[in-house]
Amino acid sequence: MIGAPALAEAPATRGGESERAIRAQSPTVQWRTPPLVADVTFDGRADHVFVGSSGNASSVGIVDGAGGKDARAWVLEFAHDPARASGLCGAPGEATIALEEPGIDLAALGCDGASDASCEAVRKTAAYLRSAADRGGKGIALSAGDCDAFHVYFDGTAFRWWRR
Image (cartoon, rainbow, N blue to C red; front, side, top):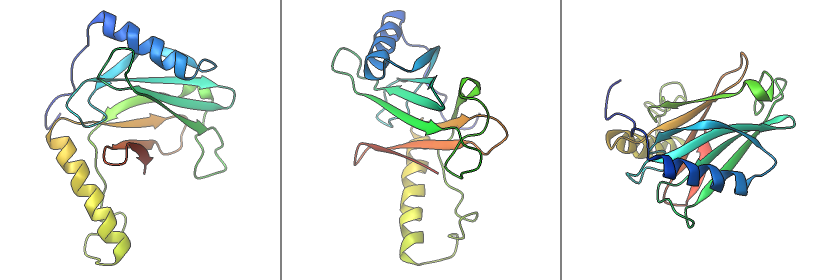
């Protein structure tokens, strides 16, 4: 893999803390373990990333690498509906997560040479993601069935998540 490697395993106690934190955040989700471990919040610390399911949805759970009882936890829910562009294919229990290099293909969005305001915003985001990747940050790919994967990235400025 090109670039800095994903952060390796965290101590077992940290894994147990993160599992308790994500289960407390969304107790009805059936979380699968062990989590993936990498810097997905782009702050230089190893975060824990879980996948789970509840009803007709899959969830991605992220526990901030700060650890301890004050660690932030986020849960992103994705409905399974292959008829909608915003839906996942396959059954919720089939969803998988993987770590990936964060980035946006400017050419695929028609923004490699364009200068309109929306493309300027996309270029700014692409630069942010390149910088995060250069520091070892990772994105999250959520897949289920034969549809395209969702690519999830963290916006550390506004402390929110977005997907492409």
